[in-house]
Length: 75
Image 1 (cartoon, rainbow, N blue to C red):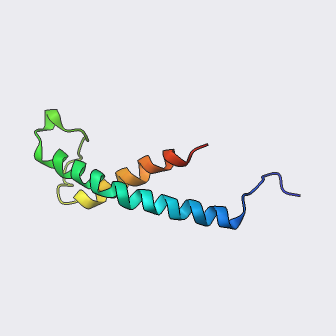
Image 2: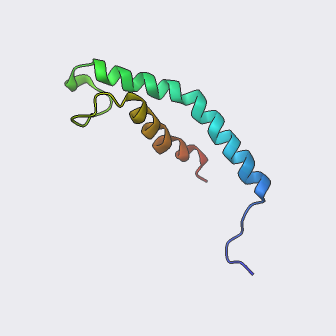
């Protein structure tokens, strides 16, 4: 007997599909925010930037999406 109740595999598939859908809908917003944060002066940036990472706009948007979106699935 397991101490943890696990949902059915179909529920995992549905949540994974929902996560991907939300990810691809919100990714352009995070990408726009990343581009905007590169164009604004340092005092007005919504996202602080590290030195030497100017050309990693897509990576910043991906990191932000993967760190923010799991909060939508917390119970």
